[in-house]
Image 1 (cartoon, rainbow, N blue to C red):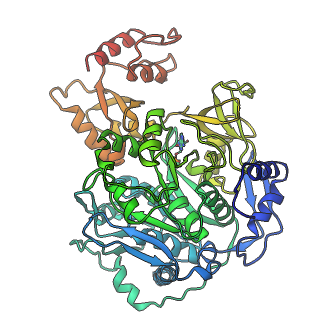
Image 2: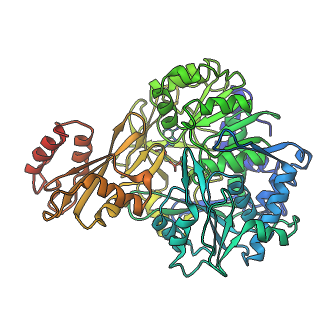
Image 3: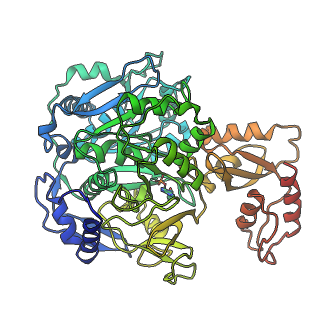
Length: 630
Ligand code: WTA
């Protein structure tokens, strides 16, 4: 099956993918190298839920990156751009990358890691982040990448939840003008772990670190004792490929599980079609491998396609806000994929940082992670895309594994603030809050998906019940995304944001319950309620209403609570606003009425709807007065 190259081809593929999904995906799956060809294409029901794609097939995803693409072996696979402009970028050909992956895989085996074992990767954006993911996949170990900005306690929760055997980390890392002690975080996280046998350490900055005898191993030392040949482990299509933790409405982050066959197929299909990648192009996604975007669109999608993918260690504003544009020119980037929060932040520094940039190699520019507002969309289109590059506003989630709704460059027209049309294989449907399908257009509904696509979440690691409750119970028989959306008369979808208690801060999903739990661990806090509010750069900011212990006067709650949250979760979850209040609006059954707080936090001080069920209606005015005085 060739890449989609016209509207009629898109329409035909879409039609076939809905009318005969098994035939459609079977045809595409024939591009891949199977150790055993699948005959069973799809078994599913959304009640248990159970979804199995190509279940009797056997494969290894890395064999589909390296052995299948053998003719590409001298082509560049990864271009790594370091944080510091004076440090040289490094390129890996497919063959060089293959050798590094195999020797890394042999290191893992030497440390006793076997098929099915869980490996935590806690690394900055260095080539070894991709190499270690692929090394796990080579031997059938399950990787779980944890964003290196998370705190020791978040890391330790994830290690415990999946009973990880080893952690892969670095001594430290460079991020903008900062030096971060990465290994120290790992040390405190694994201190109490029963499952971790080794910590494998990569020397990135030659920083002094404590190496625990018998547990900690330097990669460069152990790598000397292994060779660079490693056969690919045969995996069943439905064997786990990775776990990635993400926040939900309640409780601790959930370990979203993706499996080998379906994820492989959907990540390549969506990559090549959405970015219209052509041989020889250079593609750059600015995400971190700690998030799903990095998994699917820095590592797996591009490498499966045999593409040249750029990996950037630094931040958009270092040494100054022209860094992204300089990298695009330096490496002649053709497809550029970033997040609205980065676009808005760079826009806020003014156009002068773009003045010296040519950007004339760009063909497609993309956006992901949160709704993109019209002003940012236009700025991106005019100043970065020079009015000639289509914007692909791609909607998808950790749980979907790959892009679900997106324009196709020069095939499906972009429309500001719309993710536009579903990709082949994706069948969206909108429901109102009573569970009736929203048939009419231009009306907001809850976005669900009717039918399984190959990389749908299979389970929550260790908690299948939670998978069912979170995604398959709100609208019975459908996958519920947690997002609100509306459809225009041409069938284009506009994503309106989360309808649950998840907030999207700079494209990062943060559960309000998680932040409340962290705040409540502060000894001066009695209770808290956290909501999102519109923020000009971050999309949403975090607003915390807290009730404090009356004995603790004269405390700088703002700094103290932010420190507590940084300690328990990480700096990304720090509240932007903290307000000490004497009470929280509660129903008679003791539930906090968040919709009122959401309105107040968004500076809407009236039309609170029915507040007759409140136990303490007088508190609403008190809070409003306080917010007005902030
Ligand atoms: C939001 C990131 C609007 C949405 C790939 C979703 C978006 C959540 C878009 C998933 C978009 C992602 N337009 N909203 N183009 N892309 N979102 O799991 O609320 O980190 O549910 O996956 O981000 O975030 P996650």
